[in-house]
Image 1 (cartoon, rainbow, N blue to C red):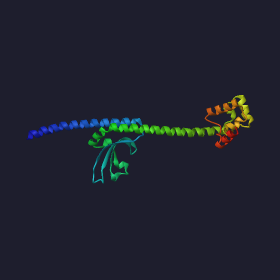
Image 2 (spheres, rainbow, N blue to C red; image 1 turned 180 degrees about the vertical axis):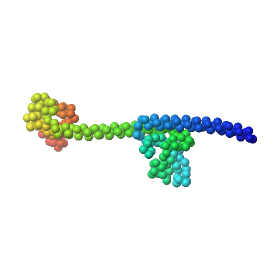
Image 3 (cartoon, one colour; image 1 turned 90 degrees about the vertical axis):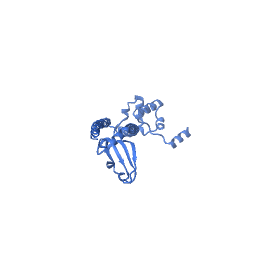
Image 4 (cartoon, one colour; image 1 turned 60 degrees about the vertical axis):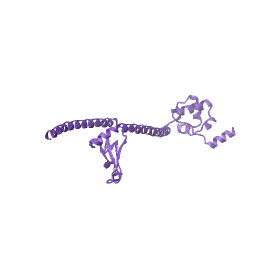
Length: 225
């Protein structure tokens, strides 16, 4: 009997060393993944649901999830334990994966692939949204830039041909702002076709255009024609 106990204790000693070594290896790999994600500077949160547990003591089911998010000002791999009593307190629901139990770290390793896929999906959507917002901001910046440019621009700055410049100048137009207030119909009555086309092309190259004719005025012109 004593011999059997000693044999079992010896085996347990060996097994405990192997378990601890395996656990340390798992922790090191998870820490590597966390560090690698940190170097990417994604700034994107994502989650992968692991499992649910029934708990009458906590007022309902407990949902365990693996995530990559910011906790207390630091980004990292997190375990979220979500239940009714902590529904509104994110910091109470979460802990860094490196501080979780061995069992939760083992389960988290199984869901890393899903988490990374979710991060990719959210990252792609964020990129699309940022690109859209950048385009909108660019349009506004262009309008503002053109408006500021108009305030101080003279028709000399358009570098028109001598003939076109003279024809525009003879209309009493001295600034670009005055010019873009004219409609194509207005200018067509007083400029030759070549000069009018040149004015439109030069303005277009600067992101500008002549004032659009009102729909009522267009109908009136077409009716007269």
